[in-house]
Amino acid sequence: MSNGQIIITYSNYFAHPLNMFLIDVNGMKGPNAYGKDLFSFVIGKDRSTNSIVVDRGKCEFPVSGGRTTRQMIRYALAGKK
Image (cartoon, rainbow, N blue to C red; front, top):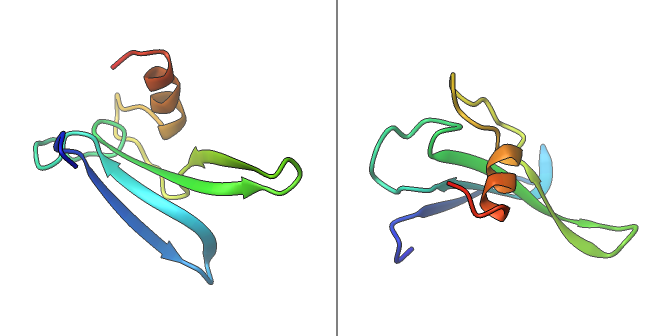
């Protein structure tokens, strides 16, 4: 992306039929560690409300001192870094 972030899509429809993404919030810069600058998430559809939902990724193992994807989304929505 123009701000240096990298977004990677990945999916194994048979194992997990959702749209999964991995975002590296600072691109090629380090530390390239889950919970620090790498976060995975899933975009799906809530069939009961017919709305789009974003949830944590299914391969989420934050490093020591890192944040989960859910925590990072909450921080981002609150305008924090």
